[in-house]
Image (cartoon, rainbow, N blue to C red):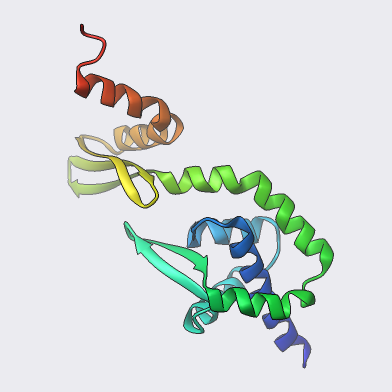
Length: 178
């Protein structure tokens, strides 16, 4: 096996190992950021490997709210068992260490969503959501008059959604007014 083929195979095994070990659906953006920040592989090798893993049905891609989430398939787990040995022990240990640190943040990022879109010249639509097990706990849409307001709302939602949600539910249930 030439070096290029070996590197390609190793990258695929690394992706399978990471996706299996994190054990929660991970988005393309999250996977890309983690792989690049830790210098496991470059962007193009990552996307090529991911595409091939999906085509070979070793990784499942599920789209929710226009975001692709990846999980390992049973066939992918079997393939990983056969080829896990080509990954150096140091890389596997580093992946396990990184996953333990980032798993809560990955779970949080996937569950708290805030984005805005330009509706017309003087109006932005802001979408704020909390998702749990791919089901919305809350989904709020707001119209605001400036991009600055839209950004500010998105930033605050991402930072404070877990505090805002119970307050909204309390107000809607009429609690605290008795």
